[in-house]
Structures are given as C-alpha cells and as structure tokens.
Image (cartoon, rainbow, N blue to C red):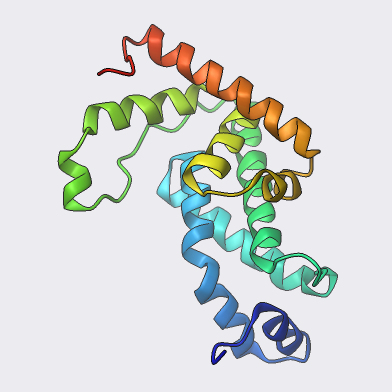
Amino acid sequence: MTERDDAQLVGECLSGNVNAFETIVDRYQKPIYNAALRIVHNRDDAEDITQTVFVKLYENLAAFNPKHKLFSWIYRMAINESINFIKQKRAAGEPPSTLLALDKTPEENYSDAALRESLLGALMKLDIDYRVVIILRHFEGFSYEEISYIIEVPEKTVKSRLFSARQNLREILIKEGVTPND
C-alpha cells in the first residue's frame, strides 16, 4: 500500500508531523462536509461544522482508539456537531434553514428533480434522530454496526429508529401527495 493508512497518519500527527494532519483533512473533509450539509442544509453552516470537527479532531487526536476506524470517529464528531448546531438554532428560536439545492451533476439536474426536492423536504421534517439514521444508512451507506458506533446507541436501537424513520418519511410523502409510482 503506497498511501499511508489512518493509524500511521495519527501516529505521525501525535509525533508533531503537521503534514500528516493535512493528509487526514484532505482525505475526509469532503465526506464530513457532505454529511453536515445533509443534516443542516446550509452550506455556510456545514463549512463551519466541518471546520469545528477538524479542530476538535486535532485537539483530541490522542484519545483516538485505533481499534476503530478513524473515519467513523470523525464522522461521529460531525454528526454530533450537526445535531448540536440544530438544537442550538431551535433553542435560539431561529427558523429552519431553507432547503438549498445540493451540488448536482447535469444528469441529476434533469432526472426526478421534483421527487428529489420532495424527498429532501420530507427528510428535513423528520425528527433529528430519525433524519440522522436515514442519512447514515441510505445516503452514506453505513452498516447498522457502524451507525451504532457513530451515534452511540445499540444496534437494535438503530434498526428500530430506521424502521420508524422510514414509516414517518413515508407518511410525510403521502400527505404531500408523493406516491411510490410518481
């Protein structure tokens, strides 16, 4: 393997190699930003969350347990930061962010744009705990075990939340007149 693996990069960072940390940031910045964007639906807020995650990562790198994947650990931080951000906005009485168009390929722009917007709008109406499991499973492709680790709940709870989230999402879409055949 020519690329340094995560454990090696963490070791180098802890030894004072700043370039190793830059490699970690380069490797994971985009997926962390995308995860935050899917939860908060605001590009500026997602950038702020991403920056906060990497600052916290740097400050807490010595606490990393190499028996886990570095990406899962960083992703957990991103999810927690995103959830905390939403809770702070709600506590401050700020209205939810407007739904922004996500970066799309030309093909995506022309295929099922209305359905996509309906789905994203319905997703934003879900409780944050349900939204997170849907995003982690269906948008990011994490396994139940990985989701369990990221959101720090038992795997059984992940499955239960995912089932409820899907049911709630289905009900929201039906109320909005979106059916599976549309």
